[in-house]
Length: 358
Ligand SMILES: Cc1ncc(COP(=O)(O)O)c(C=O)c1O
Image (cartoon, rainbow, N blue to C red; front, side, top):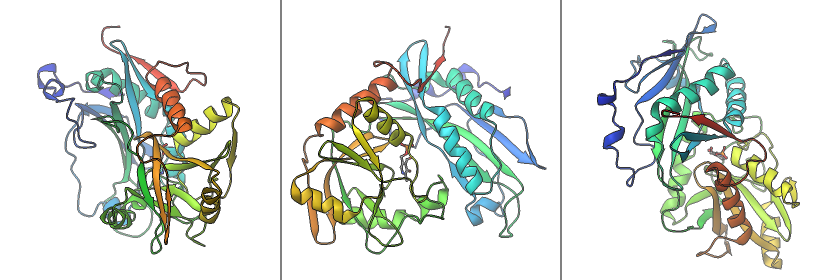
């Protein structure tokens, strides 16, 4: 791996206002870049974060052959930064590569690249609890070629961006609405891949939901509009009595890394976890019977997001709009505890990176 280090006096970390971070707007000093051509990946390069030159004929701009990942690195102490489950994100990236007909990234480049970036830019990892350094791997079809077939050239990047705590003033339960006119994905399509186009297509329904006062869309399956799938950028869990139910991975749902973690931890606690189709009618029936104890979303951004309201057609399911439920709270504390090195990492999820002079 070639590494071009930005001289310390030109690094921007000193001027960052870590108390005033806006998600996804600020990028740290270095990035990784690697090119694929003639059937092989070239040498990965770490270099100062900056612009890239592209042509208007660049394939991904036309056909959306573009995939990405999203994970976070946490400040443990002045000598250690911890990345949460990078291997699980690598597995999902590999799945996305296959589905989108793109070349796979060597695991060593992915993991070692992240490690080297942490070593170079560890000062960008915010120290406050809840804050983190977001890591964004991205792969795009880069050939100058506008035929509607797969590209022969690709660029892979890893960039990082400091982000504030999702909750700045306590938990704010989210308000969800189902959509009668739009779907996110259909099994057999690209929903289970972290493909750029899945997001492009979701912005209009998300905007409409926001205009109606909701936080995000609760997606139902595309074939029957009957089964719950996931939320805008989160998977979803229902605590029905003592059982934790989450939609099974039917090929349309993005397999969240936090979803996987929630399922594992709940099982560790001895909770009955069911991954199965769950219809919106069942959710409503359990609510009406008083059995629906808690609903929460899971995802890298919020970790756990309590749901305060579900709106479906003319029905409104109302939960506590002020507080997070006890199960979701315990889960949030457990996962963030592991991420920040405060709780035992029983499953070896944290990838600790030694940084600074250590
Ligand atoms: C569509 C969608 N579903 C679910 C998730 C949650 O996935 P993860 O837990 O890996 O962040 C995300 C976020 O990455 C997402 O974009």
